[in-house]
Length: 408
Image: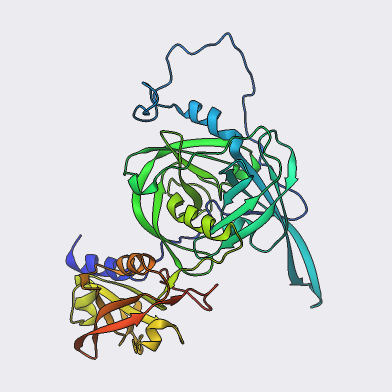
């Protein structure tokens, strides 16, 4: 690829979003009045005479309590009973063709998983967002009502509670900070309302950033090629030891179906949210209040910027911590090679003295703090470099008119 083409490709990717065209992990399936079950060719025979000639390969390294690794079948047998089929009854206000207000009821379906014997279930916030009522099938398959204990749209995590856990075993939680690229994983969920479907794959990448339903960024996300489809939202991503390492949340897809790029919120993030909301508490996340995009040498050359890497601030949210600190967003636009870019905004090059490569580093740094903490941003403003102290705020429930892929 020549330098001109490389520069145009770099410009094309500026401010691109990892959210993709598909929301929710598998997208939540909206069905008016009934649940649509896609029928496929399914072999339901159970001929015991056709025993396998080869033992199934182990999925992972040997667990500490066994001399053999767990197969996909082993994990499914142990964990599937604790995977929940969630239905949310949603009432939406719409207008009729004659302009009169009316209500439309629909059913959103998704997945979740039991985390303790008290009936607590983790799922995605977008699975139960706006629900008038929520029901769950768990363990022995009986449908029962579920209480939404609390949710956090900025991490897309919700905690439910049911009374009856008969026939269901809680899924053990793993350590998402120890996950490595290439680790084998299993996803169990209810794609297209096909309950307790299992797929397998590997961890494709780590430390991804995805956009939460309310416009903020979720950091340290796990990418997997295990098949995730509509209805998998909220289901567990399980490691080779049978432990949950993430909640399947989104896919990257142009068609809306699985193409081998799925994203799971790390279980560490989900567990932190669950512990805060379990007793009726509020979830508190640090908030900076900017949107922007990465700078690389090609972008810097095209826009005549003073640095070759960092973050060009596109927008500073009014009344936010960055705004209070005097940080400035873009003042105009420039069109280069048919692409339009914001210009004139401040440029962030360091956070707390540490050089940043791009917006992902800013998001991770902010997410590592608590509301009320003070961070120091090294910025270029008006051609001059300076340090600016910013007292982080408490993240609001949502951000109006947020079109940026990353919003710390």
